[in-house]
Length: 186
Image (cartoon, rainbow, N blue to C red):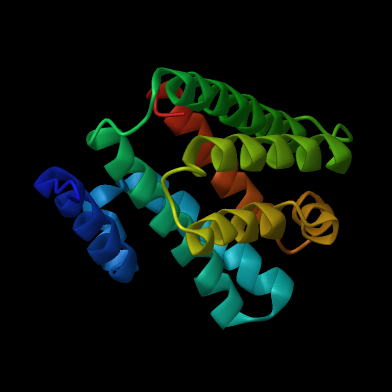
């Protein structure tokens, strides 16, 4: 006889509904203003760099979907002790990545794209390891899509060019990341 769990069914429904509703207005219900501003700037960076509005929207939408799904999994305590350890490692790596991104922006001539690419790749791999048993292959592909998009060497070089047209976006992103760190959210 197949085991039925209304709690599991409710969690699956939440993940499905929330992933279908991953728009800016819905995201604002779950994401604070500061995080929303950072997401907006990441969208602008993607759009400006790629010249493709649809792709930029897809990347940010995927980011929101993944964040919501991971949040649902945490809320429903679906992670094992080992996975929670991976989550902690991911959080530390993400914090380190944010601090590095800020430092590269604040201190001239320190940007090293290989360092950023490695940090983003490490974050991607940890997040995939965390959720691989819980999310569909399509969701795992969304994670890869987001991290691969932002670890693109040309995008990073363009973003960290002090004379480039993305520098003001980077400044706003770093300002938002700084606030998240100060508030203990990152």
